[in-house]
Image (cartoon, rainbow, N blue to C red; front, side, top):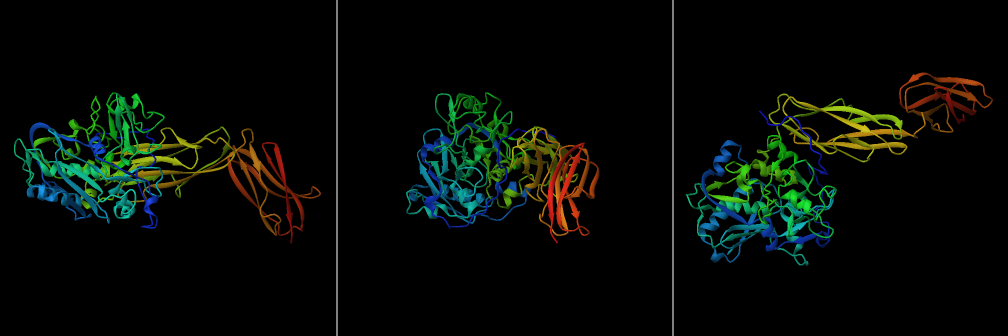
Length: 559
């Protein structure tokens, strides 16, 4: 039984599924926009602390994958242990074990390089981490930052290797800091953490998650004013693009939340109902709902925003990315929600992650022929509506989650722009699209339905077309083509409404030659052929009468 049947969110997210085609290594690496991050950024992203409670919740990698299908390694993660002699051997073994787990959840042809630091982080911090660098990708629909590891995985470009010798040189994709001053580590790999101890493997898994992309750009530099983005003008990290408030408004929508502003601070500190991650895969996996993010009433740098909600996900298989970790606790899997979030952000996923996504749904689009919707002809300022339905298969195992968006022209709209829908197996929903032209002429657009279904075109692309006549014009008569012509030509015209129509051809002296149309016709565009096999060469007049009003044109027959 799923919790939510059908709902709509008025999101301003441009793309909820990602598809890229890049030529590898054909561009000077210096031409890619990059920002190098440092320890101050890592402190803002994550300073993992302990709850101080023994919860006795353990989920090992083997236990979790015994309930799921276990997939093979999809990525190669290389760890550079800085000042290796200072690292306890058992800490290195546990770190390596966490790395091996992550390798079965990610898919990348480019090695992921981690700089691991065994260092003093203070009395309360267990670990901190982040990407060494963020990059923008060529061909991205909107300017967006990605962790360098994700950017390489998506594009096939080894950004670390290409950075060598440039002013943005980095040697690693991810920086992980583990607290050498913490006395209560459990370095075992069996997920059987005793009372009073913190599971080292769990913390490493958590910090690597931040380093490969589970991070937003939100920050509160002073007081109660929040802001987001890196660079000038500020550009969001891909994570930011999926964060919404309780009303479904995108957090980085400047029309709703100016950055920087106190209103934005209120949103990310739950004063307006909380914040959520609202990707298609995430909603499908999380029982048809957007996943709650951690947003305490006072901003907590290193915990707020870039973590899953503490209370919601405690003692669940999705507990890894909470902002605090319990004693006598271990979770050796990213969990379904985190895998879904990575999938929404465009991370290529290996089998272990793919198996966790709720993608056993079956999308069907009804009342649409040949993947196109024709709105016919109307007048400027008028509107025409067309309705179609989307359904999930009766035998589907999971909810169908999708997003409907229109591009190409603002003449095409629907009631909740960029709406997300969730359908249980066997359910359907109607989508009404409106054509309301503001200028005359032919108009084209594209309706996209991105979805979490396992089969079929994704996104589903439906072409939209319509034509607008001037506001007070009932019909238009266009020039025939070809002209001059030999034997056959076409006379085009358009009607903004149903009308009685008569189309005749006369010779230059006004003698009637042929009646081509004499009937009532609905609104639309028409292309009427004129066959002149038995007519001599010369100049002719064609006349269109619509509800008593007429227009004429000239055509030239040359044999």
